[in-house]
Image (cartoon, rainbow, N blue to C red; front, side, top):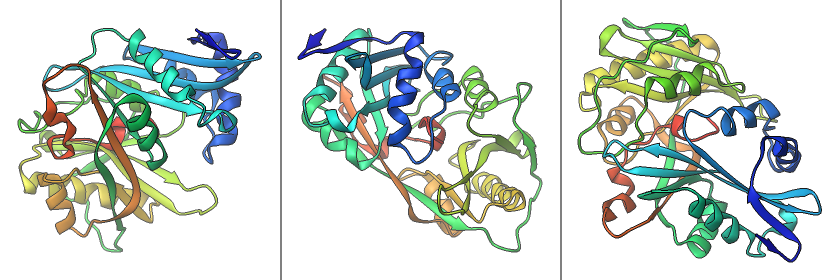
Length: 308
């Protein structure tokens, strides 16, 4: 597909250097070639990547990971949505997005976790609805913390990720063992630890230092326990706070969508809104399942996004 000299086509492995060059000036946190290869070429999910090229230079990209939801629906998660600054506002985002969605077969729904700048183009150009804002809850790490019965170990290829069941009243991305091993053990950008409490549950955590600020954040990117039991949640969150403080985190962030026991328990422990806010946008590909337009029907974790 070409328009005014712009070629829109599926990306090839040898386009990775062009994508790296395009993204480098657009982010404070540099997206390395290894990160892009890991996300786009060695992903455990099927990936569709559409790129826009002008005079041999990449000027836009729109990717989709095909994931399965806990209700059995096929969900295309829009990822790596970027238009070069000089090409924004010229209709390229719509053309790239429609080309990527068309090239990804048998989707029931498409969703995007992105920043505030993306919500308008997604709604105006591609027919998405913004289901809601995902505000990061955070807490300053207290001096006196207790690990309780939890242990903290670095995640590696041998780490196991048991399932404790899924919230029956919420929709979530299915976190298979293979996905978690790829997502955490093979991530070239971050190191992760598993905070576990026997068979009662675990969390996956990481450290992050904001560019130019120097503050070390501890992110609780994934949590697996009985999410209807406040005692189990309290154990895992309390152990995560302790171990992240020991690792050097000055503040800890967590996603907990509205109307969940996880959010209620976290807030009772002192977590408050005030960190980074992401936005969850949804587009149904056929009539039905309109409840997916309501964020309160979802259970989302930081690990569902590509950058945590």
